[in-house]
Length: 402
Picture 1 (cartoon, rainbow, N blue to C red):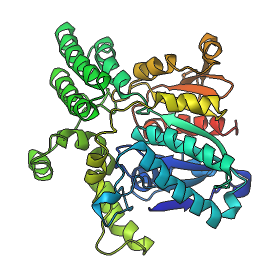
Picture 2 (tube, rainbow, N blue to C red):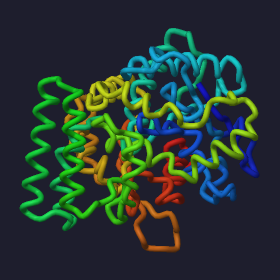
Picture 3 (cartoon, rainbow, N blue to C red):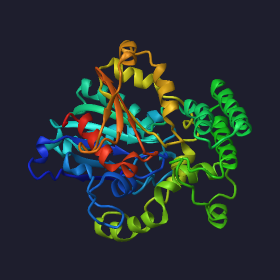
Picture 4 (cartoon, rainbow, N blue to C red):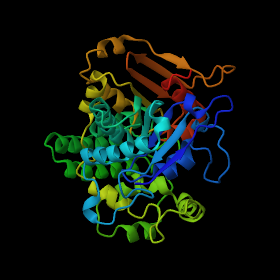
């Protein structure tokens, strides 16, 4: 498993006075060390220019390419790929145990897991295992909380809210809404029967119905247009597999050609530790396909367990995200069994501003005890790349630096 650590670079504070943040990308098969690092929160952007909203000013950053086979992580036998959330979490426990044993300077520092998309589902499972491991004394670390960004916690809630959300944004008419709702019901039916592989395939069908009815809306930000895939490229990669489009939407998006060239060119050369015959992202298709049966499974009960265990849980979502829209997130959160939920629900949310001089609202937040929710305005699925300043402020608030 490949990981990449940056020590915090705050002009006034030593790294030991700041938290450690681990960032997990989605997919499954999207690379944190590539996408999260160069496109979202790392010190340099994809042109290797300094990013002025890097999280490194207020935290040390640990990017991990997980599950195995993602990014620069690789497997040399096919049965090593993860097939479900339990396997993902148990692999990560091995990495975290090794990491904290080898970097004792981080054992006492508050450790947070931030995530995006499918990374959020993985982060929930990993957080619960980490909490147990710390209690058992098998991992020494100061785990301070998890943040689930635009997270695939309850896939079916996302699918069921696609139609109403697009309709409210004028991207569907009555007829389009009826078509999308019909296919969403098919997905629901498969999930209810526990037919998760079939649900994943129907989910792909639902995406196609949406693309046809919205003139190709971008699932990652409804205000932008999806660049059409070149047919040659897509047919080359996926002649046999029904998951072709699905993979393209969720993993190919995270390793666009320019990023791939950067990672396989200057970065690989600079790192000096990547096997010569292995290229960044080469196994990501297999990562995705092996997780197919797990893809549509919910993880709401894991969030409940984390809350009951007293773990700090933050949920944040971009207003313009479709794939994991805010309506869907609110929907599964209403069904949490956490005993404090009624109190959380009663609270009024607070407006947040990234620029104190401006009256423009950047986000809303609501928090009670160990649960917080951030509504990030004018952001799509990749919150830090759409609203870097607000994402940074949120990270500071979550890690109690604001």
